[in-house]
Length: 96
Image (cartoon, rainbow, N blue to C red; front, side, top):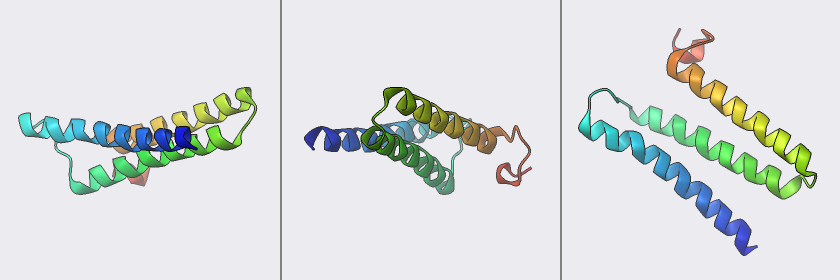
C-alpha cells in the first residue's frame, strides 16, 4: 500500500516537474508561448497517462502483457502530443 501511494505521489510530482519546464522557459524566451489551456491539456494528458500506466501495473499480472499495454499507452500519448503540437495528421484537434 505504501509503495503504491509513493508511486502515485511520484506520478503527480513528475507531471508537475514536466509542466514547470515550459513555464520556466516562458520566463526567459518568447519561443515558448503556452496558454492556460495548453498547460491544462498537457497536464490532463500526462497525468492521465501516468494514472493509466499505474492502473495497468496494479491490475495486469503477466509481465509481457503489462509491458505491451504500457508501450501502447505511451505510443498513444506520443501520437496525440505530436498531433496537438504540429498537426502531423491534419485532424481538427491541431487546428488544421
